[in-house]
Image (cartoon, rainbow, N blue to C red; front, side):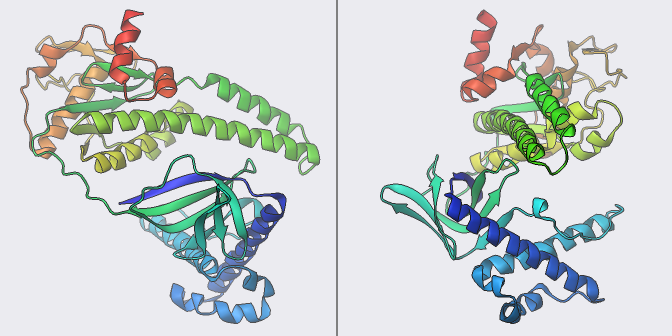
Amino acid sequence: MHYNYKYRLTPPEALEEELLFHVDTCRQLYNHVLHLLNETDDIPARYEVQERLPDLKSWWDDLGEVHSKVLQMVVKRVYDNISTLKAQKENGRAVGMLKWKPPREYRSLTYNQSGFELKNTSGRPTLWLSKIGEIPIHIHRDIPENATIKQVEVKRETTGEWYATFGINVDEDTPEKPENPERVVGIDVGILKYAHDTDGYAIKSPDFREEHERLERAQRDLSRKEHGSANWEKQRQVVAECHADLRRKRQDFLHKLSNYYAREYDLVAVEDLDAKGLIELPGNSRNRAGAAWGTFLRMLEYKCERKGTHFVAVDPRGTTKECASCGVKTDKPLWVREHSCPSCGFEADRDANAAWNILSRGLEDVGVGYSESTPVETALPVDTVVSAKRVVETGSPTLKERTASAVSE
Protein backbone atom coordinates (compact mmCIF):
# COMPACT_ATOMS: atom_id res chain seq x y z
CA MET A 1 0.00 0.00 0.00
CA HIS A 2 1.12 3.54 -0.72
CA TYR A 3 1.33 6.16 2.04
CA ASN A 4 2.72 9.66 2.46
CA TYR A 5 4.73 10.62 5.55
CA LYS A 6 5.41 14.32 6.11
CA TYR A 7 8.26 15.67 8.28
CA ARG A 8 9.57 19.10 9.20
CA LEU A 9 12.99 20.18 7.90
CA THR A 10 15.19 22.76 9.63
CA PRO A 11 17.91 23.65 7.11
CA PRO A 12 20.66 26.05 8.23
CA GLU A 13 20.95 29.32 6.33
CA ALA A 14 23.51 28.06 3.82
CA LEU A 15 21.47 24.96 2.94
CA GLU A 16 18.28 27.01 2.72
CA GLU A 17 19.91 29.24 0.12
CA GLU A 18 20.96 26.13 -1.79
CA LEU A 19 17.42 24.76 -1.63
CA LEU A 20 16.00 28.05 -2.90
CA PHE A 21 18.49 28.01 -5.77
CA HIS A 22 17.43 24.48 -6.77
CA VAL A 23 13.74 25.37 -6.54
CA ASP A 24 14.16 28.48 -8.66
CA THR A 25 16.19 26.57 -11.27
CA CYS A 26 13.37 24.02 -11.48
CA ARG A 27 10.89 26.86 -11.88
CA GLN A 28 12.85 28.29 -14.79
CA LEU A 29 13.04 24.86 -16.40
CA TYR A 30 9.27 24.47 -15.97
CA ASN A 31 8.70 27.76 -17.79
CA HIS A 32 11.20 26.80 -20.50
CA VAL A 33 9.51 23.44 -21.18
CA LEU A 34 6.10 25.11 -21.23
CA HIS A 35 7.42 27.65 -23.75
CA LEU A 36 8.74 24.87 -26.00
CA LEU A 37 5.42 23.02 -25.93
CA ASN A 38 3.43 26.16 -26.69
CA GLU A 39 5.52 26.71 -29.82
CA THR A 40 4.72 23.27 -31.28
CA ASP A 41 1.43 22.15 -32.79
CA ASP A 42 1.97 18.49 -31.92
CA ILE A 43 3.02 17.98 -28.30
CA PRO A 44 5.83 15.38 -28.18
CA ALA A 45 5.89 12.54 -25.68
CA ARG A 46 7.24 13.37 -22.24
CA TYR A 47 10.24 11.06 -22.59
CA GLU A 48 11.26 12.83 -25.79
CA VAL A 49 11.45 16.11 -23.91
CA GLN A 50 13.37 14.45 -21.05
CA GLU A 51 15.95 13.20 -23.55
CA ARG A 52 16.72 16.81 -24.45
CA LEU A 53 17.82 17.67 -20.90
CA PRO A 54 21.50 16.68 -21.45
CA ASP A 55 21.64 19.03 -24.44
CA LEU A 56 20.15 21.83 -22.35
CA LYS A 57 22.86 21.35 -19.73
CA SER A 58 25.55 22.08 -22.36
CA TRP A 59 24.53 25.75 -22.49
CA TRP A 60 22.45 26.09 -19.31
CA ASP A 61 25.05 25.72 -16.55
CA ASP A 62 22.58 25.92 -13.64
CA LEU A 63 20.90 22.69 -14.72
CA GLY A 64 24.12 20.80 -14.04
CA GLU A 65 23.83 21.83 -10.37
CA VAL A 66 20.50 20.01 -9.97
CA HIS A 67 20.03 16.24 -9.70
CA SER A 68 18.92 14.66 -12.99
CA LYS A 69 15.86 12.95 -11.48
CA VAL A 70 14.66 16.28 -10.12
CA LEU A 71 14.84 17.79 -13.61
CA GLN A 72 12.91 14.87 -15.07
CA MET A 73 10.16 15.35 -12.48
CA VAL A 74 9.86 19.00 -13.54
CA VAL A 75 9.07 17.85 -17.09
CA LYS A 76 6.57 15.36 -15.67
CA ARG A 77 4.94 18.17 -13.69
CA VAL A 78 4.33 20.16 -16.89
CA TYR A 79 2.75 17.16 -18.62
CA ASP A 80 0.63 16.32 -15.57
CA ASN A 81 -0.77 19.86 -15.57
CA ILE A 82 -1.51 19.63 -19.30
CA SER A 83 -3.35 16.33 -18.74
CA THR A 84 -5.40 17.91 -15.94
CA LEU A 85 -6.46 20.79 -18.17
CA LYS A 86 -7.35 18.38 -20.97
CA ALA A 87 -9.51 16.29 -18.62
CA GLN A 88 -11.35 19.38 -17.37
CA LYS A 89 -11.96 20.52 -20.94
CA GLU A 90 -13.39 17.12 -21.83
CA ASN A 91 -15.76 17.43 -18.86
CA GLY A 92 -17.19 20.63 -20.32
CA ARG A 93 -15.30 23.13 -18.16
CA ALA A 94 -14.03 26.36 -19.69
CA VAL A 95 -10.25 26.22 -19.26
CA GLY A 96 -7.44 28.41 -20.54
CA MET A 97 -3.76 27.70 -21.04
CA LEU A 98 -1.00 26.98 -18.56
CA LYS A 99 0.80 30.10 -17.39
CA TRP A 100 4.41 30.62 -16.50
CA LYS A 101 5.21 30.13 -12.85
CA PRO A 102 6.35 33.19 -10.87
CA PRO A 103 8.64 32.55 -7.87
CA ARG A 104 5.81 32.68 -5.31
CA GLU A 105 3.89 29.87 -7.10
CA TYR A 106 6.72 27.35 -7.45
CA ARG A 107 8.05 26.20 -4.09
CA SER A 108 8.96 22.50 -4.34
CA LEU A 109 11.28 19.95 -5.91
CA THR A 110 10.88 16.19 -6.17
CA TYR A 111 13.44 13.38 -5.93
CA ASN A 112 12.16 10.19 -7.50
CA GLN A 113 13.74 6.74 -6.99
CA SER A 114 17.23 8.08 -6.23
CA GLY A 115 19.21 11.09 -5.01
CA PHE A 116 18.05 10.96 -1.38
CA GLU A 117 18.77 9.03 1.81
CA LEU A 118 17.72 9.14 5.44
CA LYS A 119 20.79 9.18 7.67
CA ASN A 120 21.63 9.28 11.35
CA THR A 121 24.55 11.67 11.72
CA SER A 122 25.97 11.85 15.26
CA GLY A 123 22.68 10.64 16.70
CA ARG A 124 20.69 13.25 14.78
CA PRO A 125 18.44 12.26 11.85
CA THR A 126 19.21 14.04 8.60
CA LEU A 127 17.90 13.90 5.04
CA TRP A 128 20.67 13.74 2.45
CA LEU A 129 19.76 15.21 -0.91
CA SER A 130 22.06 14.87 -3.91
CA LYS A 131 23.90 18.11 -4.79
CA ILE A 132 22.44 19.85 -1.72
CA GLY A 133 23.72 18.07 1.40
CA GLU A 134 22.40 16.79 4.73
CA ILE A 135 19.40 18.65 6.17
CA PRO A 136 18.25 18.14 9.79
CA ILE A 137 14.82 16.47 9.86
CA HIS A 138 12.34 15.92 12.70
CA ILE A 139 11.19 12.28 12.56
CA HIS A 140 8.14 12.57 14.84
CA ARG A 141 6.94 9.08 13.83
CA ASP A 142 8.94 6.15 12.52
CA ILE A 143 8.67 4.95 8.97
CA PRO A 144 7.60 1.25 8.92
CA GLU A 145 10.51 -1.17 8.70
CA ASN A 146 8.93 -3.01 5.75
CA ALA A 147 8.48 0.26 3.80
CA THR A 148 10.33 1.32 0.66
CA ILE A 149 10.78 5.05 0.07
CA LYS A 150 9.97 5.73 -3.56
CA GLN A 151 9.92 9.51 -3.66
CA VAL A 152 10.70 12.61 -1.60
CA GLU A 153 9.11 16.00 -2.20
CA VAL A 154 10.78 18.96 -0.50
CA LYS A 155 8.56 22.02 -0.23
CA ARG A 156 8.79 25.49 1.25
CA GLU A 157 5.43 26.51 2.69
CA THR A 158 4.12 30.08 2.48
CA THR A 159 5.06 30.46 6.15
CA GLY A 160 8.71 29.91 5.26
CA GLU A 161 8.86 26.43 6.84
CA TRP A 162 10.38 23.52 4.92
CA TYR A 163 8.81 20.05 4.83
CA ALA A 164 9.75 16.73 3.27
CA THR A 165 6.97 14.38 2.16
CA PHE A 166 8.03 10.74 1.70
CA GLY A 167 6.05 8.60 -0.71
CA ILE A 168 6.46 5.03 0.58
CA ASN A 169 5.25 1.59 -0.39
CA VAL A 170 4.53 -0.80 2.48
CA ASP A 171 4.63 -4.52 1.87
CA GLU A 172 1.60 -5.57 3.88
CA ASP A 173 -1.51 -7.58 3.21
CA THR A 174 -4.68 -5.53 3.12
CA PRO A 175 -7.08 -6.86 5.80
CA GLU A 176 -9.97 -8.78 4.30
CA LYS A 177 -13.32 -7.07 4.62
CA PRO A 178 -15.88 -9.15 6.56
CA GLU A 179 -18.53 -10.85 4.43
CA ASN A 180 -21.19 -10.23 7.08
CA PRO A 181 -20.30 -6.94 8.83
CA GLU A 182 -21.71 -6.77 12.35
CA ARG A 183 -20.69 -3.29 13.48
CA VAL A 184 -22.25 -1.00 10.88
CA VAL A 185 -22.86 2.76 10.86
CA GLY A 186 -24.40 5.36 8.58
CA ILE A 187 -23.08 8.92 8.70
CA ASP A 188 -24.86 12.09 7.65
CA VAL A 189 -22.60 15.16 7.46
CA GLY A 190 -23.75 18.71 8.00
CA ILE A 191 -22.69 22.14 9.24
CA LEU A 192 -24.29 22.62 12.68
CA LYS A 193 -23.62 18.97 13.47
CA TYR A 194 -20.60 17.89 11.50
CA ALA A 195 -21.50 14.20 11.62
CA HIS A 196 -24.65 12.43 12.84
CA ASP A 197 -24.49 8.65 12.90
CA THR A 198 -26.94 5.80 13.40
CA ASP A 199 -25.57 5.02 16.86
CA GLY A 200 -27.17 8.26 18.05
CA TYR A 201 -23.97 10.28 18.27
CA ALA A 202 -23.77 13.80 16.88
CA ILE A 203 -20.39 15.47 16.49
CA LYS A 204 -20.51 19.24 16.69
CA SER A 205 -18.70 21.18 14.00
CA PRO A 206 -15.38 22.55 15.28
CA ASP A 207 -15.54 26.18 16.35
CA PHE A 208 -12.91 28.15 14.44
CA ARG A 209 -14.38 31.60 15.02
CA GLU A 210 -11.31 32.84 16.88
CA GLU A 211 -9.02 31.59 14.12
CA HIS A 212 -11.15 33.25 11.43
CA GLU A 213 -11.24 36.54 13.34
CA ARG A 214 -7.47 36.48 13.79
CA LEU A 215 -7.03 35.78 10.07
CA GLU A 216 -9.37 38.61 9.07
CA ARG A 217 -7.51 41.08 11.31
CA ALA A 218 -4.21 40.01 9.79
CA GLN A 219 -5.60 40.39 6.26
CA ARG A 220 -6.90 43.89 7.04
CA ASP A 221 -3.49 44.90 8.36
CA LEU A 222 -1.87 43.46 5.22
CA SER A 223 -4.16 45.50 2.96
CA ARG A 224 -2.86 48.71 4.60
CA LYS A 225 0.79 47.94 3.84
CA GLU A 226 2.59 49.03 0.71
CA HIS A 227 2.76 45.99 -1.54
CA GLY A 228 6.26 44.58 -1.74
CA SER A 229 7.65 46.59 1.20
CA ALA A 230 9.46 45.05 4.16
CA ASN A 231 6.43 45.62 6.42
CA TRP A 232 4.17 44.08 3.80
CA GLU A 233 6.36 40.96 3.69
CA LYS A 234 6.30 40.65 7.50
CA GLN A 235 2.52 40.95 7.57
CA ARG A 236 2.19 38.50 4.67
CA GLN A 237 4.06 36.03 6.86
CA VAL A 238 1.54 36.59 9.66
CA VAL A 239 -1.37 35.95 7.28
CA ALA A 240 0.29 32.76 6.04
CA GLU A 241 0.76 31.54 9.61
CA CYS A 242 -2.93 32.19 10.38
CA HIS A 243 -3.93 30.17 7.32
CA ALA A 244 -1.58 27.35 8.35
CA ASP A 245 -2.91 27.29 11.92
CA LEU A 246 -6.50 27.04 10.70
CA ARG A 247 -5.62 24.33 8.18
CA ARG A 248 -3.74 22.21 10.72
CA LYS A 249 -6.53 22.32 13.29
CA ARG A 250 -9.11 21.34 10.70
CA GLN A 251 -6.92 18.50 9.41
CA ASP A 252 -6.34 17.26 12.97
CA PHE A 253 -10.08 17.12 13.63
CA LEU A 254 -10.82 15.31 10.35
CA HIS A 255 -8.01 12.77 10.81
CA LYS A 256 -9.16 11.81 14.32
CA LEU A 257 -12.84 11.57 13.42
CA SER A 258 -12.27 9.53 10.25
CA ASN A 259 -9.83 7.25 12.08
CA TYR A 260 -12.44 6.53 14.74
CA TYR A 261 -15.10 5.40 12.28
CA ALA A 262 -12.66 3.35 10.20
CA ARG A 263 -11.37 1.48 13.24
CA GLU A 264 -14.56 0.95 15.25
CA TYR A 265 -16.86 -0.39 12.52
CA ASP A 266 -16.98 -3.16 9.92
CA LEU A 267 -19.01 -1.07 7.48
CA VAL A 268 -19.28 2.71 7.09
CA ALA A 269 -21.95 4.18 4.80
CA VAL A 270 -21.82 7.82 3.71
CA GLU A 271 -23.37 10.04 1.05
CA ASP A 272 -21.61 10.30 -2.30
CA LEU A 273 -21.46 14.09 -2.12
CA ASP A 274 -20.32 16.44 -4.86
CA ALA A 275 -18.48 18.63 -2.36
CA LYS A 276 -17.19 21.05 -5.00
CA GLY A 277 -20.63 21.46 -6.50
CA LEU A 278 -22.14 22.18 -3.09
CA ILE A 279 -19.57 24.91 -2.44
CA GLU A 280 -20.48 26.61 -5.73
CA LEU A 281 -24.16 26.86 -4.72
CA PRO A 282 -25.27 30.35 -3.64
CA GLY A 283 -25.59 31.10 0.07
CA ASN A 284 -23.54 29.89 3.03
CA SER A 285 -20.67 28.79 0.77
CA ARG A 286 -18.04 29.76 3.34
CA ASN A 287 -19.40 27.32 5.92
CA ARG A 288 -19.71 24.57 3.32
CA ALA A 289 -16.13 25.14 2.22
CA GLY A 290 -14.89 25.21 5.81
CA ALA A 291 -16.67 21.93 6.56
CA ALA A 292 -14.28 20.18 4.14
CA TRP A 293 -16.68 17.30 3.52
CA GLY A 294 -14.73 16.11 0.50
CA THR A 295 -11.51 15.91 2.52
CA PHE A 296 -13.26 14.02 5.31
CA LEU A 297 -14.75 11.46 2.91
CA ARG A 298 -11.40 10.92 1.16
CA MET A 299 -9.68 10.39 4.52
CA LEU A 300 -12.41 8.00 5.63
CA GLU A 301 -12.19 6.01 2.40
CA TYR A 302 -8.45 5.31 2.47
CA LYS A 303 -8.47 4.61 6.21
CA CYS A 304 -11.31 2.13 5.79
CA GLU A 305 -9.26 0.45 3.05
CA ARG A 306 -6.28 0.23 5.40
CA LYS A 307 -8.36 -1.20 8.27
CA GLY A 308 -10.35 -3.67 6.17
CA THR A 309 -13.62 -1.81 6.68
CA HIS A 310 -16.34 -1.60 4.05
CA PHE A 311 -16.66 1.98 2.76
CA VAL A 312 -19.89 2.56 0.85
CA ALA A 313 -20.82 5.89 -0.77
CA VAL A 314 -24.55 5.93 -1.59
CA ASP A 315 -26.76 8.17 -3.70
CA PRO A 316 -27.65 11.15 -1.46
CA ARG A 317 -30.93 12.00 -3.21
CA GLY A 318 -33.94 11.75 -0.91
CA THR A 319 -32.08 10.65 2.23
CA THR A 320 -33.57 13.57 4.17
CA LYS A 321 -37.11 13.35 2.77
CA GLU A 322 -37.51 9.57 3.00
CA CYS A 323 -38.77 8.05 6.24
CA ALA A 324 -36.26 5.54 7.62
CA SER A 325 -39.08 3.42 9.04
CA CYS A 326 -41.64 3.14 6.23
CA GLY A 327 -40.03 4.82 3.21
CA VAL A 328 -42.70 7.50 2.67
CA LYS A 329 -41.20 10.75 1.37
CA THR A 330 -42.03 14.04 3.06
CA ASP A 331 -40.76 17.43 1.90
CA LYS A 332 -38.96 19.34 4.63
CA PRO A 333 -37.50 22.85 4.32
CA LEU A 334 -33.99 23.33 5.67
CA TRP A 335 -35.15 25.06 8.86
CA VAL A 336 -37.22 22.01 9.92
CA ARG A 337 -34.78 19.99 12.04
CA GLU A 338 -37.14 17.17 13.11
CA HIS A 339 -38.51 14.30 11.05
CA SER A 340 -42.13 13.37 11.70
CA CYS A 341 -43.63 10.82 9.32
CA PRO A 342 -47.34 11.43 8.56
CA SER A 343 -47.71 7.78 7.51
CA CYS A 344 -46.22 5.68 10.32
CA GLY A 345 -45.65 8.32 13.01
CA PHE A 346 -41.90 7.73 13.26
CA GLU A 347 -40.21 10.76 14.84
CA ALA A 348 -36.50 11.46 14.95
CA ASP A 349 -33.92 14.14 14.42
CA ARG A 350 -33.74 15.14 10.76
CA ASP A 351 -30.07 14.14 10.49
CA ALA A 352 -30.62 10.88 12.39
CA ASN A 353 -33.34 9.89 9.93
CA ALA A 354 -31.00 10.67 7.02
CA ALA A 355 -28.21 8.62 8.63
CA TRP A 356 -30.52 5.57 8.85
CA ASN A 357 -31.44 5.92 5.19
CA ILE A 358 -27.76 6.16 4.27
CA LEU A 359 -27.00 3.01 6.25
CA SER A 360 -29.93 1.16 4.66
CA ARG A 361 -28.70 1.98 1.15
CA GLY A 362 -25.15 1.09 2.09
CA LEU A 363 -26.16 -2.33 3.37
CA GLU A 364 -28.15 -2.97 0.20
CA ASP A 365 -25.10 -2.13 -1.93
CA VAL A 366 -23.00 -4.61 0.01
CA GLY A 367 -25.76 -7.21 -0.04
CA VAL A 368 -26.53 -7.23 3.68
CA GLY A 369 -30.05 -6.74 4.99
CA TYR A 370 -31.44 -5.58 8.30
CA SER A 371 -34.84 -5.27 9.96
CA GLU A 372 -36.85 -2.26 8.84
CA SER A 373 -37.99 -1.77 12.42
CA THR A 374 -34.45 -1.14 13.63
CA PRO A 375 -34.61 2.68 13.42
CA VAL A 376 -37.80 2.84 15.45
CA GLU A 377 -36.56 0.45 18.12
CA THR A 378 -33.22 2.13 18.64
CA ALA A 379 -34.11 5.77 18.01
CA LEU A 380 -32.93 8.00 20.84
CA PRO A 381 -35.33 10.69 22.10
CA VAL A 382 -32.38 13.06 22.64
CA ASP A 383 -29.21 12.61 20.64
CA THR A 384 -25.93 12.38 22.48
CA VAL A 385 -23.77 15.28 21.36
CA VAL A 386 -19.99 15.07 21.37
CA SER A 387 -18.08 18.33 21.32
CA ALA A 388 -15.67 18.76 18.43
CA LYS A 389 -13.21 20.17 20.95
CA ARG A 390 -13.13 16.82 22.73
CA VAL A 391 -12.33 15.05 19.47
CA VAL A 392 -9.49 17.46 18.72
CA GLU A 393 -7.98 17.56 22.22
CA THR A 394 -8.34 13.93 23.27
CA GLY A 395 -8.41 12.14 19.95
CA SER A 396 -10.89 9.65 18.57
CA PRO A 397 -10.03 6.28 20.22
CA THR A 398 -12.32 6.84 23.21
CA LEU A 399 -15.10 8.76 21.53
CA LYS A 400 -17.85 6.70 23.09
CA GLU A 401 -16.32 6.90 26.56
CA ARG A 402 -16.03 10.68 26.27
CA THR A 403 -19.64 10.81 25.11
CA ALA A 404 -20.75 9.04 28.25
CA SER A 405 -18.72 11.40 30.42
CA ALA A 406 -20.12 14.42 28.55
CA VAL A 407 -23.67 13.30 29.36
CA SER A 408 -22.91 12.82 33.05
CA GLU A 409 -21.28 16.29 33.40
